Length: 413
Image 1 (cartoon, helix red, strand yellow):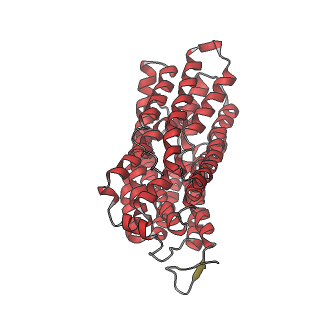
Image 2 (tube, one colour):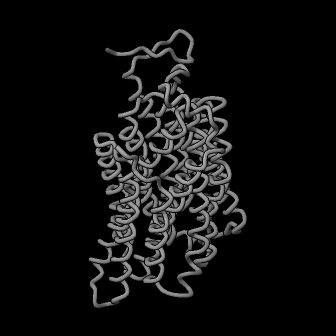
Image 3 (tube, helix red, strand yellow):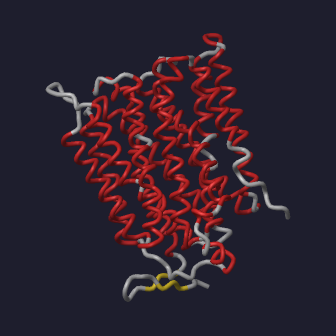
């Protein structure tokens, strides 16, 4: 039977099937913003040339988006739990689109002038500050509309939006940057954020507040900010994203400088990472919903990710004895392995908090995630300058391994 949900929209009643439209809005919103957050780093080679940046300066510019998101995620999450999903998501998407359009007009390099690094970094940080609204608000909406037993697959589908947007960015933005310049890059991204805002205006509504089960509702009475287990999972999510960001932000530099790949080769490799991550996220969400083993899967993912980076580092350490084609395949494999667990971990985190407080819990996790997005591009160039790509990928694997004890042990049956 199609259970009816009364929604905070006068005169409107939506059936349970409406949850798929809500999920679609969440996917579109996250994909639009991810095209900027994960897509702009794929233009790193052209950004380095166009803005006249060194690797360290490039890392600061790319990391500024992550800093902006990290600073805003928790406030946006608290605002979502207080004000609701709809106003937060719409305001954030429209604000992000406006910031990107402003960059297209005023923060692009030309033959006449090169924008200074502080202006570029500030603009990137502003995009992050506004776009930080997307994660918590869309996640809370999905947790409210979907019941336990569906949340793993629902959140995993939502998390496919991150590699989907990144894949769109990886396929489109390097071409735009190299042929039409960064005004075209930022304009395209503004459009990708504005369209989901229109979807949210049309379809995003909240079900009545008592959508939780008694157990979840009881859990939700305690603030996530006071729950040590939620903090551990949030921290684990943030740390495990760091090796993923190493791939997303500097694999293009690695493929260009070490692998001597051109635009087409770089775009194909980075798109393969994103497509592979999408497939694995949906598969993992469905698998863990069926088996009820989210915690075990999360712990196992840390080991698989660590192993994949160890193999990549070992292959790079052998130098020219290993052809470049297997190296490209290994970096794609490592990027997929370290991205496959997202939906499962976010579903477990939101379940621990309860749907009524999911915005805050997801904000906590995403704060940790985007602190990593700020730190990785900032620190990785210095690690590379002091060592080699072999060390960089070994460190990435070691960081993934550190997360294993942070994720909770599977509950005893």
